[in-house]
Amino acid sequence: MPVLVVVGAGPRGTGLLERIAANAPELLAPGVELDVHLVDPHPPGGGRIWRHEQSPLLRMNSMAEDVTMFTDERTTMDGPVRPGPSLAEWAADPAAFPPLLPVDDPEVDRELRTLAPTDFPTRRAQSAYLDWVFHRSTGELPDNIRLFVHQDIAVRITGDPDGPQRVHLADTVLLADRVVLALGHLDSAPGPETAEARAFAARHGRSYLPPAFTADSDLSGLAPGEHVLVRGLGLAFVDLVAMLTEGRGGRFTPLPGGGLRYHPSGREPVLHAGSRRGVPYHAKTGYRLQGPPPALPRYFGPELELPDGPLEFRRDLWPAMAKEIGYGYYHELFHGHPERTALPWAEFLADYDRHDWYSPERAELVAAAVPDPVDRLDLERLDRPLAGLRVGSPEELRRHLHAHLRADLARRSDLRHSADLGAFFALLSLYGQLARLLPGRPLTARSTAAELDGWWTGFFSFYASGPPGFRLEQLLALSEAGLLHFLGPDTRVELDEEHGTFRASSPALPGHQVHGTALVDAFLPRHVLDRTADPLLRQLLRDGRIAEERLTDPDGHRYHSGLLRTDPDARVLDPALGDLPHPRRTALGAPTTTRAPAAFARPRTDAPAFRQNDAVARRLLTELQKEV
Image (tube, rainbow, N blue to C red):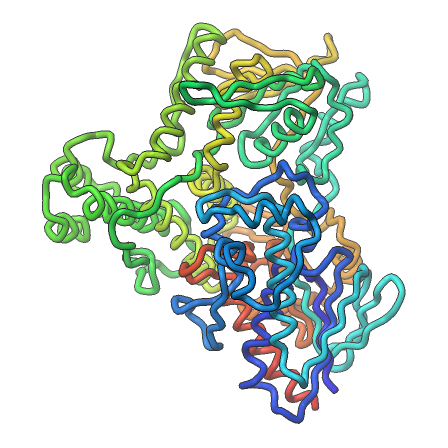
């Protein structure tokens, strides 16, 4: 009887299980029995990141209607589509989607019963949904597949490539014909870039918190009233603020004319926050498209002409990507708000097709077709909204930042600006197309480091992965209460040995410095294989059976991505086999070079992870069939 062991039972492992259940009737003969073992120390479905046991203050940055674990008619794959509900659809009528499971937590149960499609659910609500998806997938396994769940830790894999694999758990050993590492977001030991801050904090009795998942961070060392410098204004920052304010007993109440007032508990620290851009991520849009959805991709698809050899992101990819974003934006503007355009869509599109994004002809076309500059897409201004800002006082900086946040909130809640949502859908399309393209056409080392994993990832997150609007309302209220101060763009933090404090400054406010007795790096940690906290990966690395992606340009530029090397079919590349794919080991998820990290997605977006799960499930079933 063939055996499959999947290490990791969170959303990635659950998604793979769903695809195994969907494809098994076609690929596994009725007389062939298969044992599947899932291994994870956390409950299956949610796994570690989406486990129930975390603060109810932590929320998703997606609306309930935009979260699904199921393939649909737009998923480009060989396996069968097994439609399933989004989180919103499941919460609205759980009895319509068997199995009907009780939700043990009364607070989560109440949330689910009142959850609107456009609400931003708590992460505990998502945990309940993922738990249900796991049970549904389990129930859809055919009779010839048995499932075993081990709430345990895998610490080692041994075995020859042409024989059984031994997966060593804390208490037992599983024999497997195939092993899948269904990896979620993993921790690494703090890197050398944090060494100075760690040593400084230890030397002066100060607090320094390196990048971490906020749900797992120990914030107890940040004292009430303490002045804390914060680097990063993304989602980790938003979670940090929630835990240090409402999480310490404070509360928000609505103001009669709109907005919020914060009522402190007295236990909050005072936060001084900055970043490269100097502003928080854009709020998520609170509306739907007013016109038909754009047909994506149009310019950044399989027909894209590329030069031979390693690619440069800015030179070879970005112009077509920018044009795709513009297409999504203007498609919605012309179809949803034609009264604000001066040309018919067909005429505009014919000219738009002919011109490069950065050509003067394209700029002239947009100026003629879109009379109001507010309605024109300026990607550079979007990326760096405070570029060149200079102010004369902290109060002037505060007013500028408040105006920026209020304008962002207004734009992201006003249907007149639904073109921003068109750009958002184009960004999602680009993300999926990059997952198709890059395994076969790698970038140069310099381009991967500075542009793909650096600028592009940051820009995508800034525009498309921001918090719900009420979070920005809370930041404004905390600023008004004197508990949050914005440092400005290009924030620089230095170590002040004379005073034993961390010192922050921004070129937007020349000559002004802020001192703090604690420093928090509020951004998610980048997993680095040679510092991984995962015991199984650590052992495989020591044994020389896995390797990190390391790129070197012909001109000598090097980049270590920290990602586990896999081939385009997600097989682990094994240094002991001359960097050939290991025939019995597969790895999926965020810490791998397959670059399809998101384990769930918006409906009808042809999510890369769903395509990958299907392809891997079909390959594994075909291979396991031959083991009989």
